[in-house]
Image (cartoon, rainbow, N blue to C red; front, top):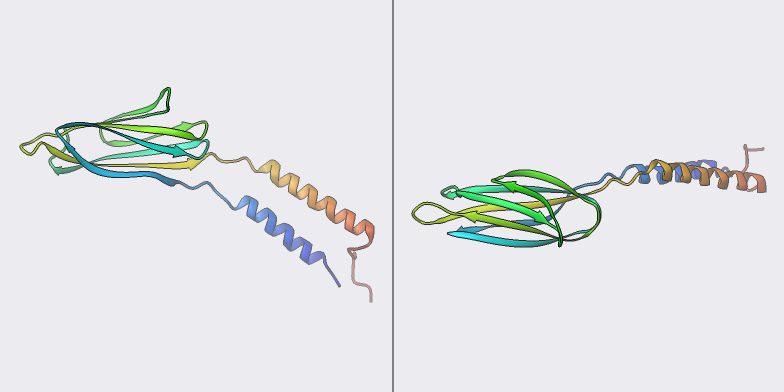
Length: 159
């Protein structure tokens, strides 16, 4: 009974699961709405940890483009990033917690109304895995050596 292939397969699966996961972006806030006259809106969002927040602010040009569309992203104590006009911006946050998006808009035209779209996405900071992988491989090597030393893992089939 040769158990070595089972241990090699288990080690390969363990290393593959550690190396195969990549950070991906999750939408934290997706908001669309109307600006009537001049308005200022605030939205709260929670970040689960350190990472990068990507902001996409769009003037939907309905029925006319907005004359002003600005955004500032803040924590409770500081401004993290500002965006003057529609566009995309990203900024890093060092820890999880509550954050805020402050939107200011001014409509124009005879209806004095305009539309916007705001989307915030979060990508977690990458966790350095090389040291974890080496620790896992070292532990599996020691485990295999201990089994071999105790005689539980045969070196070769003996007939």
